[in-house]
Image (cartoon, rainbow, N blue to C red; front, top):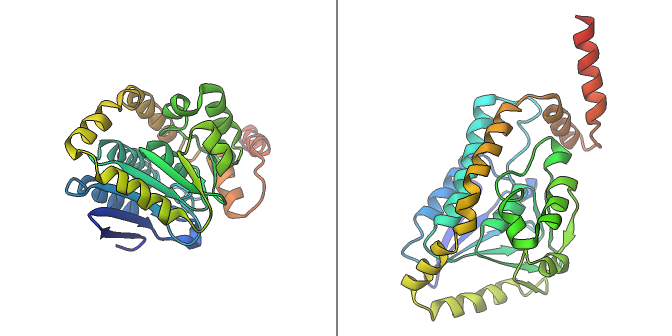
Length: 264
């Protein structure tokens, strides 16, 4: 499937997002392929999620937000919720192997994974309010359990970027490796997993989903608000600024829309 590579190594499913020209941002078709790969992972010892070409993942593709198709965006948003839920429901441990940027929805994939290992050059952060969106699928809810409410709000609302070492100190990742040591570190973790009981690893993982399960109503409510905001002036300004590689001016966009209404 274009954009997603799935292979098996030593009874481990390796899933690679392979669209480096857009920092591995995924579209609806790619999200569906990712979901299927996680849902079919029961025969394996573990799953590794990673990205190709020096990036982990930049979340959902923004190229259609400038001229939004409500039905397509609704499908992408709901597909993203199904994706993070598939990671949490996967019966096998899921390791995020991060090399490069984990941004926006890509950062939320890190939140969803059971473990995360990152290279020194990796960076983490949310992009929602900066590009006319909000990170409701992990960053505004479950991430607070992982790194603390104040830090999670800082990341989700202010869109700051964090180094791998900062992510380690916050508790967002489990280990930081040299840039050329990611595969070796992941294989070391996989070796540890392979010595443990698959049955009881699954029980421990699913039982650990308490906070995730309690976040689901919040995620569904946030998703509904995102869908209602499709085509809003803030979404259009954020998306167009991103595509045009300029800083957004949300307040100017609102003033322009108000002026247009007043002239009618």
